[in-house]
Length: 274
Image (cartoon, rainbow, N blue to C red; front, side, top):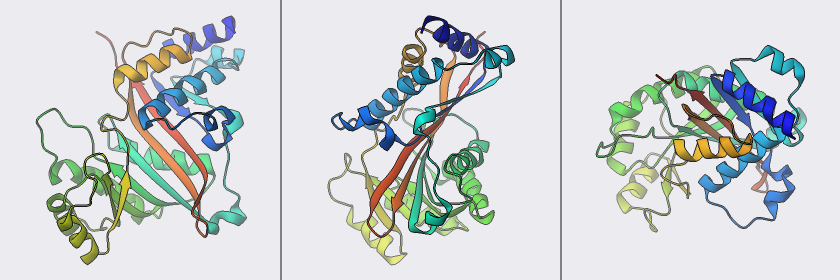
C-alpha cells in the first residue's frame, strides 16, 4: 500500500484537475450494509473509497506521464447500459454547480453519457449555483446556466431539463423567459413538509412536475472535500483543491420504478496558491 499511495500522492501533487467516477453504487457491497447516509456523508464516503481503490492500482506508466487531469475511477463498479435495454431505462441526472464555469454543464453531460455508454440523457435537473450569504437567487443568476442547458437540449444530448428549489415567483419568471421550458422543479422536504399551494397551482397549470429531494443545502464544502481527498490518498497535499461540480445519475427501470444504477461523477480543480 505504501508505494501505491505514495504514487497517488505524487500524481495529485502534479495535477490541476481531478475527475472522480464512483461507478454504480449498487455494486458496492459494503455501502448496502450501511444505514441511510445524508448526501454529503455519502459523497465523502464515495470520494475516500474511490481514491483508495484507485491509489492501489496506479501504474508506473501513469506516474511517468503525470497527466494534468487525473481520471480516478472505482473500476470494478463501472457499469454501462446495455443498448438493447436502453428504451426500458430512464436516465436522470442532478447537477450541482459549485464553482464558476458554464462549460462545466456540457462536459458533465458528456462524461455521464460516456460513463453509461449512451448518446442522450432523459432529464437533467440543475441545482442553483451557490451564492454569497445574504444574496437572493434571481433569474439573472440562472439565465446563463439555463441557456447552456437549452443548447444541450437543442443538440439532442438531453431530452428534458428541470430546476431545484425555486419558489413560485422565480419558477414563473424562468418559465416565461426560457425557450425550453422547465419540465420539473424539485422541492426540499426539509424546508417544507407540504408543497406551497401557489407553487402547486402554477406547476399544475403549466404541466411542471413537482418532485421532492433531501439533498443538503451545501452538498460538499471545500473543507469536507479536502479532508476526503487527504484520507483517500493517505495524506496528500490538498491545499487549493476544491470541487467544481458534482453530477449524480440514476438509471431507473421505467415499468417498475426500480433504481438499477446510481453513481457520482465529480470534477475538482486546484487553484494556484500564491
